[in-house]
Image (tube, rainbow, N blue to C red):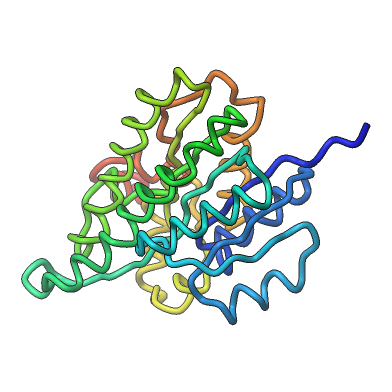
Length: 253
């Protein structure tokens, strides 16, 4: 008897951590539904992979998310793993953060997690599936220029705990990964040499993480190896959160 492969849904899958997670799921035998609002980039990424199904969807739009759920129901009737990775970043001072910017960040980073998780809940119930939401170290510790971004990611962390508390009775686990500095194309483009040096000093492992390293944590939390893990926040950050204030100066001695 042929057993169909498990189904993973990864949002923000066209690049970065989402694409790395897609690749790792494929290695683990999943069929991966790659979701992204950037249609050309999504098609380009999916064309290089086997075992994927690209679906264009803006997770901040309720109607599009509802259509995504209908299509997944038609195609598969179940979701074994949902990775809510789609996100946008905006870095500016509090006084320069207008309401439109605030709403744009919240609509994707927070509303998108809520909408997608809720819409796919019937399919997750069928599979007793797992949800992994991608937050950020900025949701655990405040920093400059992150009033909208950091707040949205802190809210994702609490939303994850709400999901774990309410969905456990259905056999659904919900966990959160909070990446620290990662060598994404965006980071390489906007982090100057001084910024990178400061991060290296503040991170006990003295380096940025890789997209693959974050993907390893995500896929683990979706696997049977994490069957008794729910409601947790894993800071995949090289120890950045643990260092506190003053560690770079102490290490310089």
